[in-house]
Length: 258
Ligand code: ZN
Ligand code: FE
Image (tube, rainbow, N blue to C red; front, top):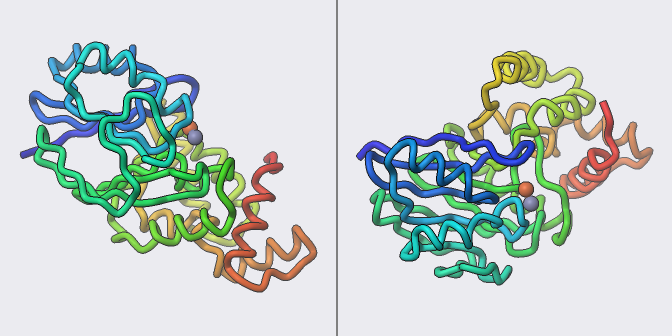
């Protein structure tokens, strides 16, 4: 069965990913119900499942209204975050089966941005919410840098051709930081050109791939000599481990302006 996927833009820079076949649809992190309902109506689709990565309102705000329209849908969400409307609470490391699309997904535990953050991986696609971004990573609101580093390291080991569907269009700004950290990385330079062409044509910069992230996302490159050197220049302290590199990079990015 062929499954298509498309981004539904929401708010300022969110994407609600919609997977569908000819009849059924699944959405990931519907922060707003209205654009989802419009997309379903336009395509004559029925919503069967909602996948939630974490509790922030821009990822969960549409659940209640979507459940009013589709009372029988499954709502998968992290157990640790007590999200209203959850029908299947997930701890991470389960496998779930989306019957409507005949799609098996692995649930990944990805703490860092929030303490219960999860991701979904299957059919060569990764839905990672606010954990891994294209050329960046999520902020540390509830978890520690060490937790986020471990979560990103887990994602970095997925097959290189895995398509990465994250929730925000932050890529251009993230690449400015990547270029400040690794001015000598040709993969960053090439990606800036690609992404700026897409964005000027008003097209999403997503999905990316794990391979692309390994080549140009500084947060997945904490053992790169140039990243280590830049962190040293920025902080004045030589980082001793990749986790220390990551911790310093995340702090640097929090106050970085291009
Ligand atoms: Zn968030
Ligand atoms: Fe978000």
